[in-house]
Image: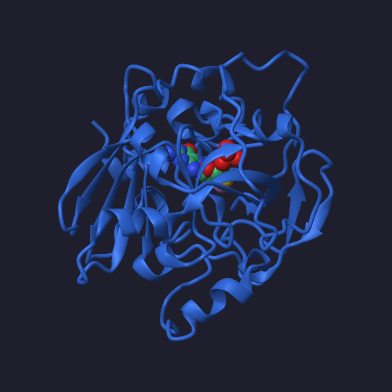
Length: 304
Ligand SMILES: Nc1nc2c(c(=O)[nH]1)N[C@H]1C(S)=C(S)[C@@H](COP(=O)(O)O)O[C@H]1N2
Ligand SMILES: [Mo]
């Protein structure tokens, strides 16, 4: 048996680490076949005009047919495989340093949250970008519901890991389940959003149904999909991508065009759909909302 580290070496050598795969590739892989008909429900909410994508919306078809969702495979065409994701019933565990650990049903949660629509830009570490109208609610509202203890300083998120429906879990060198984390301060930031819909409908499986994080000033891998657990802790969580390759995909992962990925430039990004290249902005252009959170973190590797 190869050790985990050696297996990882093999995986990297073969270019399997997709967040690290070469960004030069076809931008629209949609070949004209119809994506599978997963029943999506209409889900609309008043648009909050404070958050303006600043770019034309990306075509819905591009957003729903060009994905990163490793649990369903390493390619961008996972929409077919992801149709197997079972989202009903769904529940989320509120765990760790909270007043009362408990599990909340997704439908029950939806009754308690006030939904709004926000258009956000998304910047993948692989240097592609999209602009999406999300429907959801601030993560801060869920944090309030969870009643964390004052001593909690981080929030850890976990994606469903179901070997029956997720063929990617057979790639045993990946540290499943997919996890991500934020500081409590980041979690309470007004931009930090939990999305339950997009383009006026519930989120399709491949984009992270039924509920995903949306943190637009960070590289896309921070936006963890299909969340089953939200855990409060006083230790910085070790994330999925950090466990794979901390030097390339760190905890902070804030967007910065001046800090190249070890294997490619982050100066520009390619817009899904048009394929146009545009300059990347620091904090993905959201500095007015988030930069102040990092003013005192001068010793941290904030941008990769
Ligand atoms: N559970 C899980 N969440 C995930 C990923 C993943 O593979 N698994 N990929 C991440 C990456 S790298 C990106 S860019 C976005 C992509 O979201 P999209 O497919 O909806 O565009 O999801 C993020 N969340
Ligand atoms: Mo990504």
